[in-house]
Figure 1 (cartoon, helix red, strand yellow):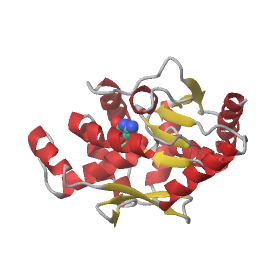
Figure 2 (tube, rainbow, N blue to C red):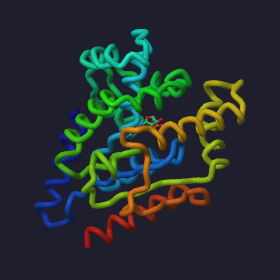
Figure 3 (cartoon, rainbow, N blue to C red):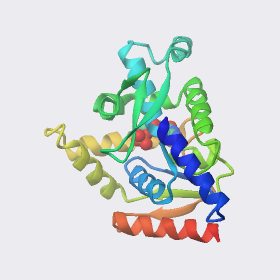
Figure 4 (cartoon, rainbow, N blue to C red):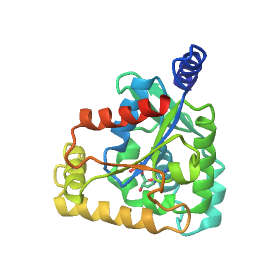
Length: 244
Ligand code: DC
């Protein structure tokens, strides 16, 4: 976690110089809305730590699948969670941190369709959320952090100075996800991608524990018709307005 200390120190130095107050920025929204692209770019522009909270749920899912755990057996799941250690390691080639599961870099594997098919069900298990949320709060406790996910503004950092809720039309989201998956799964169809996205939306927004909600104090960013640069400019403007 060298990256983390670097970013926190950078934010602290800026604060000392009176340049700006390190903020906590929570970015929530539907799957494949471009949350991580915005979060990564915003963090890099501000010299903040970026945390991809979804990667943690994916890594936990991968671990449970590898161990053949019956996901409906909550006692077994809880026991297995004790064996999991989650870390991030900065990867300069990506300009972001890779997910490390028990010392193994699993960044590529957690993006597999197999993980995507089960991650929403795993993320709905209370003991899984307990583990992930505690880790996320520890990572962000010094401020100067941009974290993206589904419950960052509502549960992880309810006092975040800036909350952004990202959305985009289902058609745009499907096309984005398809473009991501096609190089790896050339046979995949638009219908399969659409179905996976809508199933995940349904589970994420209807689960009993910390469902995806739009916080009343979140700023809405619909990027259906925005470029990547355009959304970054809007979010940067919000940051500036808060830094005064
Ligand atoms: O952002 P993502 O697609 O990598 O997230 C993977 C899954 O994890 C998604 O289906 C919802 C879940 N998730 C969550 O429940 N809470 C978060 N803070 C982040 C992700």
